[in-house]
Image (tube, rainbow, N blue to C red; front, side, top):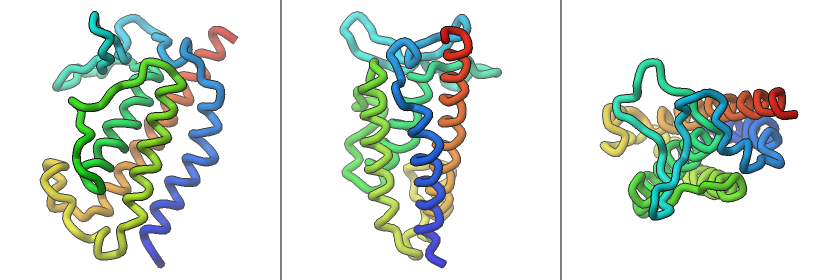
Length: 175
């Protein structure tokens, strides 16, 4: 058994048959829809710079988030920054990320960072999957890279399901 193939097949199956079909024809209205008061989303400041609504530590319970927030979280925090850190030059960070404020740009960023992450995982052989993640992931530093790859798969599926539910709620409310 080649574990790299197994973990990529899991992610690809979800991506190709579950997440991407659910994101077809995503509109800007859906992307930025705030289903309840005090949602976290992607907002632009007076200078036109987009940023996450965020608080550390997150309040308990955490706020409801928009599709924009979730999609950008997956694109940048889950996939892009990690791909840059572990397989690239490390130049994409929370500070250098240019967050998209439209559905079209959000989907483009999601596709770009998914494919960058996937290309990086393809380079991992069994030894690469067993090597320690390193200090970039904090308390997980000594865990094997396979732990991070599986965590990313889980995060994509978890947040993808939330995005799909938000689309269902939007459709039920607005048709």
